[in-house]
Image 1: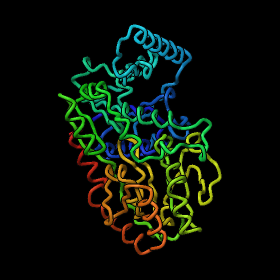
Image 2: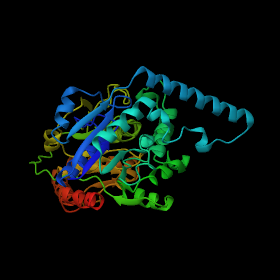
Image 3: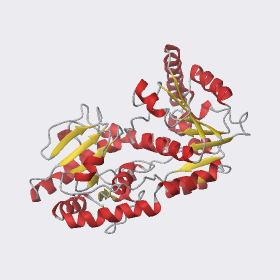
Image 4: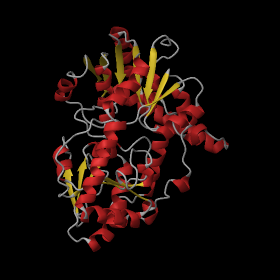
Length: 421
């Protein structure tokens, strides 16, 4: 039995985001291959608070869960490092020097892995003595001493191109009003070419991090190719989001659904739908209703909007998938993959998505979903599905078949077996 140490920076249970679901999916696949997995995490950066109940549930999947408790010394170190970085940036400005990465902190800055956390990680590394190390995200790369541990297999599940992802989210934040009100959002942030016009790219330092690992796991074919082009040593393995098909009795009689996670791409997508799509839809269908679910506190304005119902975090969406007519994905920014698309398709629910998100998914326009290039097309697709339950059923059933044939657990196991042997 091979022993694996998996580091994931957040509490993935219950899964509130696509990244959480991805983590549990990979762990489940490793367990199915007969591996013994130890999960390491931290309270320093998690977007969901660690609870004792989460540890109990995760121990059903892994040998043990280790959570680093951040200390005041850690936060003090991070503040000092931030001040040093700001001072260096100001000095470079005064001297007229151009800083690497445009003055951004390194993608694997020590601020993500302060000394106390580093000691904790390396002590557990000795105790667990794993055959394989699995890192999630490039930010926490500094936890691993690659030169000393080169004899062990090391893997990074990229999930997102974090440098590009951060730059894109920062661009959205800079363009949003404060406080955030639906009516005060400028047209700029609702433009489908918002990111195209900014020419944002992945930081070269992120590719350098990937080259530290024996294997770099990409979640989309486009990102797999990008990593291959900009690295020299790492072996790239494509493992898209997979999901076991769920044969629920879909009625396609309820509301439309928009599951969201805590990132600004969902903020932008929600604002795009409410401002540019919803008025067109409500003009044709006054009874139209979109239910918003998920982990959206502080990132989505809760202004009352006719036709929008906020459901909050729903631990199990199967009942909603069984009733809803379709899932709307008006997101056009981001890296990685929109997990909400794959999950909806696996439940036999058709998806309406903008092309930017659909291209990174198993969707094929007119075959297993509807793809839009702009707000007018998005509204037209929403109206079509709302008025045609048979179309919902046809596309939904085709969606489920697509996942079953090309994105099921067997494909995940096959891909992971390339790594663990």
